[in-house]
Image (cartoon, rainbow, N blue to C red; front, side, top):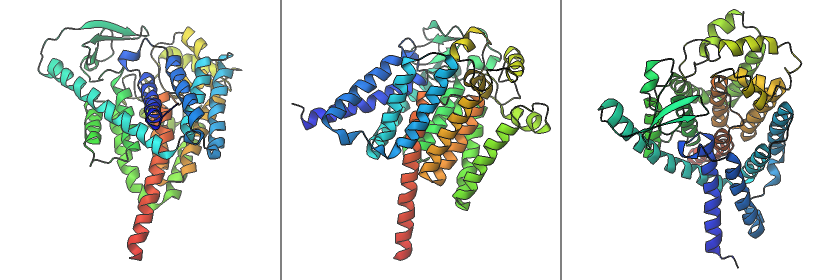
Length: 401
C-alpha cells in the first residue's frame, strides 16, 4: 500500500529527475561519463509509478497540439540521422510528460533547479577566485571532454587547459561546465523563468555569475532583455510582430552571405567559439566551405544527421549552420515553430520576450533539442504567463477599488 507520504517522496524524486536531466544536458562535469538515456529512463520510470497511483497528477490533454509539434522535432531529427534513437524517443516522452504536468509541479522543478545551482556556482566561484585572482596553488587533475575541451579539474571548478584561441580562456570562469558562454546563457534563461525577481537573493547570485563568465553573448542577451522588458509596456502585438520579423529576416538572409545586411549585422552578431561577439568566426573554414556545397545538395531539407556530422570532423563549431547541416531546413523550421507556438500559446508579453531571447541564443549556439533549454522554456512560458495574468487581475482589482 502506498501512503500519502510515499507519494510525496515519489513526486519529489520525479521532480529531482528533471533537475538531473537539466544538469546532464548542460554538460555538468560529474555527469560527463553517464549516458543521458539513464536519466531519461529514471524519469520515465518514476512517471509510470506516479501515473499508476494518481493519473490526475500527470496527464493534461489540453496540451496535445504542443506535444505533437515536439514529436515532429524528434521525428525530423531521426529522419535526418536515418536511424531510430532510443535516447530521442525517451527524451520526447520525458518532455511530453513535463508539458502535461500541473503548474504547481513545474514551479517546484524551477525552484529546485534554482536552489541547487546557486551553491554549485558559489562554491566553484570561491575556488576559481582563490586560484585565478589570489593565485593560490591548489591540486588538480587534467581531464577532457569529447577530445575537444581540455581542463584542469580542481574538483569544485574547471579551468581551460591545452590549445585555445585566446589566452583569456585559460582564466575565464565556467564553474563545472564546459564553457563560460554555456553557463552564462543558461543563467540568463533561468533568470527569465524566475522573472528577474531580485527580491530573491538566488537570482542576484545567478546574475552576478552570468557577469563573471565574461561572455559577451551573455551580456548582449542581458542588455536585450532589459530593452524588451521595457518594450513590453507597448503591448504584446509589438513583441509578436518583432518575433516574426526576426524569423523572416533570418530566413531571407540565410543564404545571402554577400548581402550588406548579413555582413554588417547578422555576421557580427554571431559569437566566436568562446561566446564572444567578434565577427563571423563561429564556424571553422572547413564547415563554411561544406555549408556552401550543402546549400545546393539533396540533403538541404532533411540534413545529414548527427553521426555523419561528427564523422566529417569540422572542428569546434556551434550555431545555426550546425543545426541546418545536421537536421536540415525542415528541422530548423519545425524547431522554431514549436518554440514560437509554445510562447504564443501562453499569449503573454513575457513569454514572447522569452522566445526572442531564446531565438538570439539559438543563432549563436543552436541546441533546441537540448534538455535544459526544453525544461526552462516549457516551464518558463507557463510560469511567466501565469504571473502576468495574476498581475493584470491585481491591477484591475486596484482600479475597481
